[in-house]
Amino acid sequence: MTESKADTHQVLCMAMDIGKSMIRCGAEANRVEETVTRICSAYGGINTEVFSIVSMILATATGKDGTSDTQTRRIHGYSTDFDRLDKLNALSRRICKETPPPEEVLAELAQIKSDRRHLLWYVGIGYFVVGFAFTLFFGGSFQDAAVSAAIALLLWLLTSFVRVQGLSKLFFTALSSAALGFLAVFFEKIGLADNAAMVMIGDIMLLIPGLLLVNSLREMLCGDLISGLLRLLECIILALAIACGFAVPILIFK
Amino acid sequence: MTITKILTLILTGTLGTFGFTLLFRMRKRLILWAVLSGCLTMGVYVLCVHYSVQLFFQNLFPALFATAFAEVLARLTKAPTTPYIVCAVIPLVPGSALFYTMYHFIIGEMEQFHEMLMQTLSVSAGLAVGILCVSAVMQIVTKKPKGSQKTK
Image 1: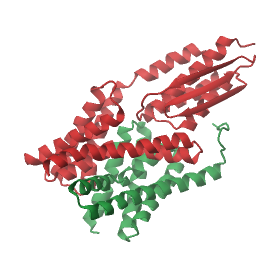
Image 2: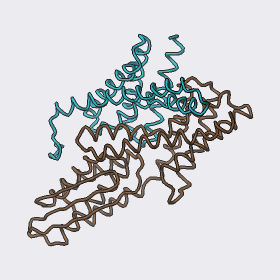
Image 3: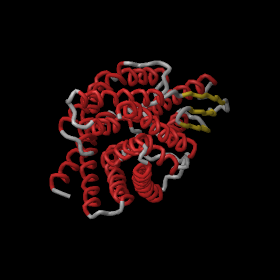
Image 4: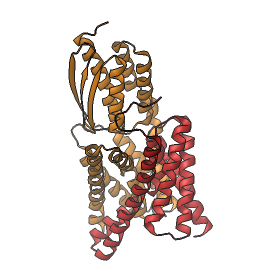
């Protein structure tokens, strides 16, 4: 069976779409490169060269008949969704084993992308619990923790239902930090919270890019220096954005 | 450290880990394992604080433990390692130190600012080194050079 140009193209297209979705869920660069390579070779590609960083995937696949195809995917922004990443991993394992027709895979991919509603509540509870737990963890009172959890819920509503298009992650982080700070100070002023600083600290943990740091370290260790450094830089810049955001209410009220 | 303080740290730290497993949308059957690893990591941390180990090592040891335990869990549950590491280590991430660094800078208390900045940096460095050490060892042990095919 010889593969036409369209086949190589289709397969690579499918592999790249999966790769892009994986990065958008917070996968490491080398994992994405591996997945794209494996999918292409499962469909009979003789050579696949993939390069991936956090914001782009670039790949050239060569089919059995010698035709080759090059595609790029640009990735704007990503979040953390291990559940979806897991489904994508399962899908790519199944693809490598069974090599189903690409149309079928694309339909399944679309389905994976669409089912997120039922997990939204989880995330809300997560925000609530994190805000509550870390305020106590860093020495706040129960009242502080309750206020912090309430503010965390507000932040969750903000991040999941208000999608401000074109607002960069950096700016969004700074703005929401400032908003959280103002709320914390407000609750302290009306006497609901004992210590605004404790409330702020609890809520900071929600914004701190912990996964980013771990991913960046592991990528650099695997030799993906560019991707690792990009993430590390993002991490530092986000930390600065958080600090700047919280600085505003403190500057005004102290 | 008093017993109350120890219990508070471990309980709230574990609760925080649980919160993050939800936040990162981990699968239900993995959450329990992640929470267990978070709890044990906090235990290691509390031990380090109790014996007043230096700040850098106070975070290095728990990170070492969390990463090693995550590698074990990942193999047991056939899941990726990273989520386990992040969820276990997250209570140690210097959120409060970062806040106070900024706070003292704004207030203009430069001495405390430097102190908190150094604290933020050494805590981060401790975590980073801990995670890197175990990851590096695992890379050598499992011998999976870059670009090779992963076994299923």
